[in-house]
Amino acid sequence: MVLLSVLTPVLALILCLVLGFMLVKSRGTDATSTEQNKGATKGDFRPWVDQDLQDDTEIAAEGEDDWVDSREVEDLAHVPYSPPRYPEETMRQRSKDFYTLMNQRRSVRFISPEPVPRQIIDDVILTAGTAPSGAHTEPWTFVVVSDQEMKSQIRNIVEEEEEVNYRQRMGDKWVHDLAKLRTNWIKEYLDVAPYLILIFKQTYGILPNGKKKTHYYNEISVSISCGMLLAALQNVGLVTVTSTPLNCGPQLRLLLKRPANEKLLLLLPVGYPAADATVPDLKRKSLNEIMVHI
Amino acid sequence: MVLLSVLTPVLALILCLVLGFMLVKSRGTDATSTEQNKGATKGDFRPWVDQDLQDDTEIAAEGEDDWVDSREVEDLAHVPYSPPRYPEETMRQRSKDFYTLMNQRRSVRFISPEPVPRQIIDDVILTAGTAPSGAHTEPWTFVVVSDQEMKSQIRNIVEEEEEVNYRQRMGDKWVHDLAKLRTNWIKEYLDVAPYLILIFKQTYGILPNGKKKTHYYNEISVSISCGMLLAALQNVGLVTVTSTPLNCGPQLRLLLKRPANEKLLLLLPVGYPAADATVPDLKRKSLNEIMVHI
Image 1 (tube, each protein chain N blue to C red):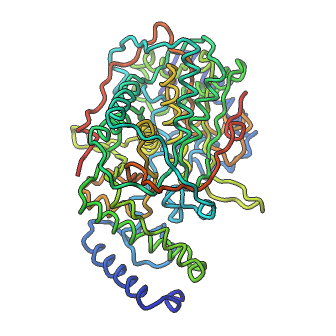
Image 2 (cartoon, chains in turn brown, orange; image 1 turned 90 degrees about the vertical axis):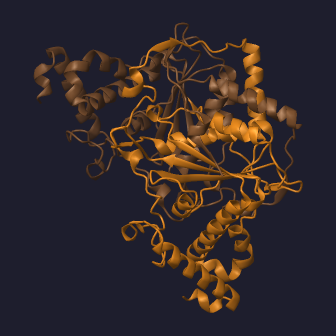
């Protein structure tokens, strides 16, 4: 409330609208809301916030260890496996080239509206789908959005939630940094990029008998899959920025009509970089900083 | 205890040795042990179990949203970014070829002891290090083990813990499936593969003033990085199996002398496939099963 006194009336109005929208939205949700509000540090007016952020499947002690060794999979016949073997010199060259290519990847927020062939997106998703997963559950759903109206709705949800996030967590910096922060919750790329890929993790599956089956390590599996997706995008010269839309998961899940076992993990806008794209001039850690050899 | 009655004396002896080893080990640990034993469903003799499996940083509500937008990074100068642009036909071909290559990847447990050039491993780790991370924290440590004695110790720890896991969780199937299960906790590849890569997530960092700084989304970031590592291995014709050694994290962390902020996330044995390598004859989901287009 202290903050409100320094806001312009227009901003106060926007805040009221956001709050109003949230109240309306929260009534329409099927959420078992109140006990799951751990994450909200200030204000208790966002009853659905964080409902989808909980994922304690990873800490269960009964997960599969070796990911091909699930009881489902171990009953399968084994077949010989002999992938291509490269001469050592070729290996060295391929290894160096791949690193060089991947090292050019950057998270890019300035994405061109230029259309991207749909086949490329299909291939990239297929590539992501080759990732290993705990007990071969393949616990991922890739929602590819190219519809302009849907992209706008997603942008609205993310920006409204982001604005609240920034206000809440940066309360004490608010007065000084308003202009700067504003650039942080405005996500133009969300309706400019030709594609948005929303990556959902399936926290459990439904067995033929109707029972739920926990997908162990689903978050790790889906994140690994995202790593392969990023490699595939980089390989064709497309860009993205890996984002984890804070607290928007439940709303986006409802908007995209995904079932309750799916939780939004990552949102990636995908396209060609804008002609005037820039990236922060950051460095990566050196090999010695990330690797220990024993 | 019911189980013991059906075990052969030899197996009972092994069990006693395992228990004894655990008791000895647990005294040598600096663990704050007892309250963190959530995961163990039977038996309370593994005080350090799961101490490292807890990671609630992902459910905090204050993580960064857009991963390049951290407050550290936003103060950096921006520089133009113009990655190579491929003609559409080239893109299509590259995209198809990359999918074909990645689709040949399988989790392989039969790894040849044949040496692998060290430069390849360096390149693969460097490639993993190009992954994006929350607030550009790069919260990963790749411990590469080629020392034979260390590999044997790792194998011992993993197999001992695995045996307990299998006994505890599969109690009712024990009598019938002993022979079959046994193949599950024996992990020959752990001291046969020329390299083991143990991937640690850094759950927090230490600021210059000595304070801890939570690494938001560290598990997602490190898993994405692992996805890029898998792609890099596949690109040079090496194989691995993605494993999450259940409950071994704390022991392996101590063995490898990693600091307390690092938790073991994944363990990957790396090498050429054995000449007689086989894989389960499993299928992947189709594009329609993993993708929704809107």
